[in-house]
Length: 302
Image (cartoon, rainbow, N blue to C red; front, top):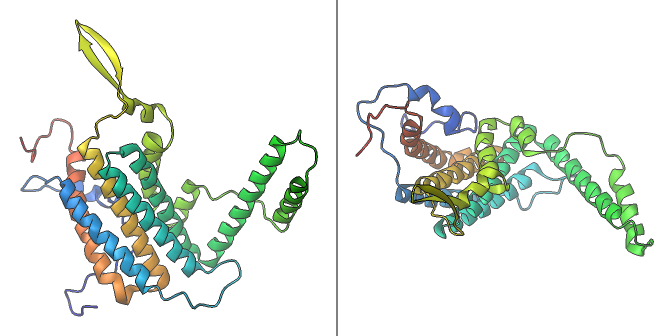
């Protein structure tokens, strides 16, 4: 860790997201126009975040810990980081294959992981207990649905076992709301990230009209408009770049959250703080361009 006045400040999840961190800077005048990041810039940055996530994992000295009842928050945090890194890599592969819908669907998982890490950071063992209760409630609901759908079958041995399992799952269970993504996001300091999650849900993960409109086009012939359907629609370069930016943000946020949970600041804080500043520099130009008032062409290249 570097010492002296040049040492990066400690990075924390609070106030991390571009959608919440830059609004106050958008009104500041700039003597030079903002530069939009290129896909090559973002790909280079993505590789750095990938390596940083591996270093956070390598620094997590948790594997010889004594087991705790209900689950160890530090082990859960590390597993969430691994899942986020796996989802991140899947998104990168799909973007390179021009599979934008599939990439954005998996990118959504990265944000759900981040919300869980943030809630775990603040809730600790109590939140792990809620995760356990949510798991039992989900298992119970699925088992009950299966029994309902197979009610016409005469009592079979597997049904008797399933009923016994349902009874067991219900013992000691407290009535509570399930841990859906929006509620989990509201538990930690990254609720603003739900904006990304909701957008990815609406335009990719769910079969909404917005998502289906990707495959529609239109052509003009003899003064008439004809609707067309494209099985392999072209990928918008801006959407590709911004999707990669999104998952970089989610993975970097996951790294910061896990660093805080595992108390790894002396090992990895400086690297993550530098990456956070680099990400904000990459994204600031894009935010300025996307939020410029209509008709304002300052800084726009021809």
